[in-house]
Amino acid sequence: MKKQTNLWSKSWVRMPLGLLATGAASLLAFNVGQDIAGTLFGNSTAEAAPMVTAAADPSALPPAVAAPKPVDSPFVVKSILPINEPIKFGKFYWDETRAPATGPLVVTVDLTARVISVFRDGHEIGAAAILKGYGEKPTPTGVFPITQKDADHVSNIYDAPMPWMMRLTNDGVAIHGSKVEKGYATNGCVGVPDEFAQNLFKLAKLGDKVIITDGRKMTIGDPILTGEHAS
Image 1: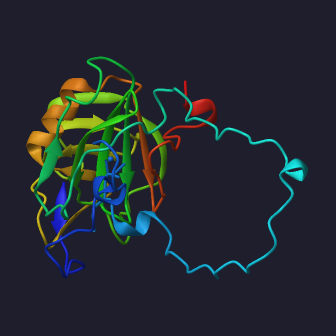
Image 2: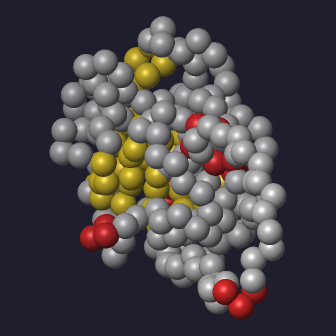
């Protein structure tokens, strides 16, 4: 469910993850994200020029060590969507061509960037601007498994339609279809465009993880899930 609020002052959300990883093939948004934005990476700082010194004796140098390669895991970012403009409210991107036809699905939501991203086998296949909760009804952060799916759900708390509902918490927080537009918020849910919600609903299974953060930075080669959740 959504409610009107005056917290939005601009019709553009922040840059998606796809714009931030320059040169990378193909990020939610979970990168999705203001929806996934330039703040996903810290401000760059200038480095002082090195002082000119005498050449080192090559025989005294330690042997070269190869840089570690990204772990070949379905829960590591392997590619992101090539999104080269800010995502407007109500807009979304969906492209499964860079991802394998099957593989573990994981969803990321960045509340700071106001973006949701969908990854399959580490490849971003969807990204959209979201609505989120504020004030007394904030959207919670954490790692949440999808516990229920209902394509035609109606909230028994607010008596409001929540199409393509994917429940995350026992007290009603879910991802669901919504009219994502300037000037609106939810009562804690993650509201996404209806067509995006339908696409995700078709792929998501009970138990698939949804990671909700408030400004997490992530790029190619970074883990999406870690520890006990990466299984």
